[in-house]
Amino acid sequence: MSLAGKTLFISGGSRGIGLAIALRAARDGANVTIAAKTDTPHPKLPGTIHTAAEQIEAAGGKALAVVCDIRDEASVEAAVAATAEAFGGIDICVNNASAIQLTGTLQTEMKRFDLMHQVNTRGTFLVSKTCIPHLRQAENPHILNLAPPLDMNPKWFKKHVAYTMAKFGMSMCTLGMSAEFAEEGIAVNSLWPLTAIDTAAVRNLLGGEAVAGLSRSPEIVADAAHEIVTRPARDCTGNFFIDELVLREAGVTDFGKYAPGPNAALAADFFVPDEVFGKTPTKVRPLW
Image 1 (cartoon, rainbow, N blue to C red):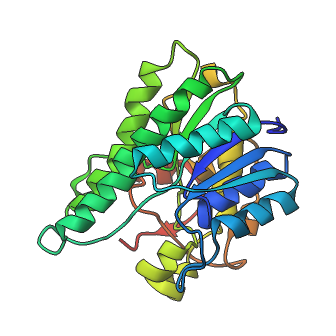
Image 2: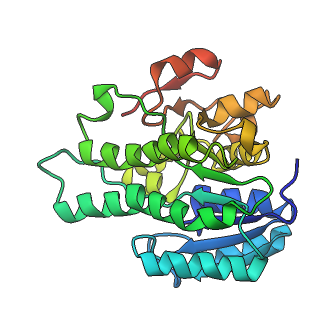
């Protein structure tokens, strides 16, 4: 299955997992909108919407770089409208943008609480809502949220309840919208990594090089995302996918290309339910 000629709207895709998903689609010849805030280089973060667009074009796709703050309704509406005008519609919406702060209740400033909920939960809802009128016209419409399974184990809440609430808000968008739009044939799914992924967030916020050395590359999530959004939408909705399990189901057996080294230990990601580890031979160790 190919994404040739399909149009993807990706929030926060100037780096990391969002950019990897964009580049995987571009290799098929897809059209990709990178809707993110980074218009000029950031002192601590790699890439901008413009460097991402250059990479997409070099990979074989067509790119539209749009400055977009997904907390702002007018900004999202303008970015979605520009995408539809440039490419003639939208086939796939990828809600990748996210904000994180792993602090306890008393250490969480309300401005950070608000940011996480505005970007994660509200942003996912707003971007999806704005894309859906265009997805209704698509042949095989998908919404893919980079959000975890809804595992109500208290261990995911007790150390960073504000972040967990905001991230699970994205997951609840999957749960609710997949049922709401099932009859219309719009697939709504979540995708989450089994292991930590080597991104700027990991390097800057979650342990730096030490944790990056226990993390897989973003390409594993991108390959899993490609597998999901090329499936028939009516037959694939309401799922909380784990990247490795998706790829194993698709026949992948060698995961070495995603690893930091041939014999590297791997760290389990947040929010992966305990029972998932019984479905894969991959050995991971919890860090959180």
